[in-house]
Image (cartoon, rainbow, N blue to C red; front, side, top):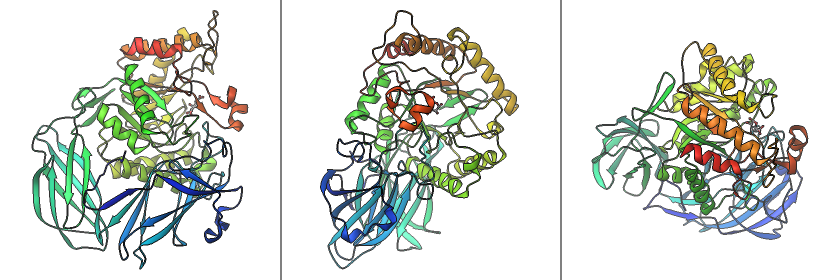
Length: 554
Ligand code: ADA
């Protein structure tokens, strides 16, 4: 399953078959002599090296190698869906790129050479290192795998190629869109281009190029709006003499209106879950069939909303959300960061880069309705305010069409006025001493806190709430950790969220149980080294709360 954008004229090849693989242990990856690595295994990719039996639980440097067939003299590009937690890319022994942040897509241009057969080596590393990857830290509450956990594709390119096209809806009723096109390779001053929407040519002309980019204003011949109930998609094909690029988009608008978020002018109620990409057998390298099953289970529960916790989700998953009409809060990688991080320019730069990479990769997904970042950062601090402002400004600049949010947890937050949509994580009757019956009042109080902080009325999402339940623990007392307790708590939240017009929606914590790090499990109380707040266990077997949510949402 290849994610959009697609191409019909250039050669695109999946690199997801077997690679030579060597695990070198806990060494400094900078010291790897790629020419001398002895490959001791063969691994299919994508496969996180920590998800397999042999490599489970290991931290260190792992090296992948395969051969690329690129015609001599041709430019090429490698598209990496995600490489954790850091990697360096070498072609024929030349270091072409480095990338930290395992969950964002990145591209590496491969310069032409005289040979047809090129050696690709990817050195990956999942040791925690603030220099290599400041956005994934050991204390975060999920397990950080390693390796190529999302697909890699090879693109054989013409000298000047179509790098990206971003579609923005200008007029929903008239079906008018604006397309920002970026070129790569040899710099051109003008390009002859055909633009077809759903197969109908809407423009065929020479356009001038400024700084490697140009903008088109196009009409969609038979416009059909996208919505969760009717997730209709259109395609745009751009073609030059020797390249093409096919993007898929949906015609929909978003608008914040007081406490409401309007999609195509109609108010939304968001009903959903936070979801990590994880499974005991596949680690973070979920096969498409499992993504589909996850979505079927969300639909079965009556959900229309997913918060991608706490990193951008796989592009193939977002393609499926576009097709099935699920709405997504997409979020850059972070967790509970503090002042010491916000004061570290390395951390700030990596955050800004992560959000820019996320927006570049996901711009055309109609399913994405919110850009988010910095989950539960310390929003009470001046340095926090500074970084949250930089992140908000960047999101608005890169994409003025979507509202910006972040999951806050601090009643004394000074960052809330920056958010277009307020997100609050809270765990009444779980970490706190409240009773389940008090939850509705706690939620109303939190809405009041947000209004006081912003001085106005904005949409409010309960971005996390929940309770842990051990799968199979059914207890007639209905105490904490039992399936009954979790079910009762979630039921109570559902009835408040569904009836309170001041609450835009909820993304329960969480879709299914997930592995976390052992360090976290001691400090936060995580039996089995799992975060057990899923309404399903890690194999997607439903707990009682699954059915309570389904009853409430459907
Ligand atoms: C936080 C955090 C989640 C998870 C949750 C919990 O809100 O954002 O990732 O750790 O708490 O289970 O306590």
